[in-house]
Image (cartoon, rainbow, N blue to C red):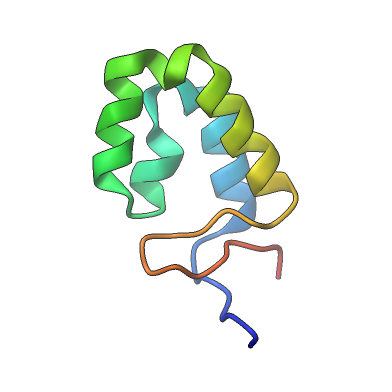
Length: 73
């Protein structure tokens, strides 16, 4: 089963995670409001959660709120 690719911009997601990842801005961009708020409260899981998200975005496995992968086009 092939999943559809999200219409969210891949480069924008990477940049938001890299520069504002500890605030969860990339998660708000992807439509994941709840986990975005949790990232603000925990400062990105003390950086660990942010690092995991960054790696997940780079390899193209990060999903938006609708379950579609945010991949390079």
